[in-house]
Length: 169
Image: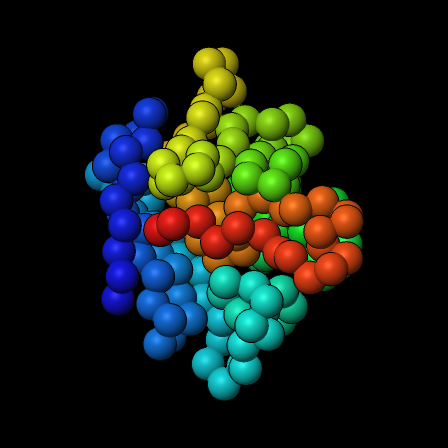
């Protein structure tokens, strides 16, 4: 299982493990609860999405062992169609692309951080001062990024078949 370590500016070392054999992503760190998302066994990969499916019924998300509903949009041409919605502990989260190399995590409609992939520099996180981002939220962002990719090429490139950037985890 390939693992990557990310130096998060607020939470320190984060380990992101991607297991293609079980179609599972696991995120852990000293200051983070474990978050995992997997494609259920027996579900064939769509080969367009890093986790292999954008159907909610095909996916299982756990935050610190607690099952959490995840609802990815179908990922058509627009960036908006590549959003992923999660309901966790009375908050609504949305992970969505804003540029070709950047995606934002919002809590109850308010952006609380973003992940981006600068050219050749690995995945970077930014949690604005005052956002109050928690370790669980940061771990959720990393898991969604690894499972669904970061960014979106926009309508023109999407129309010709380009997709989200799989983060270098």
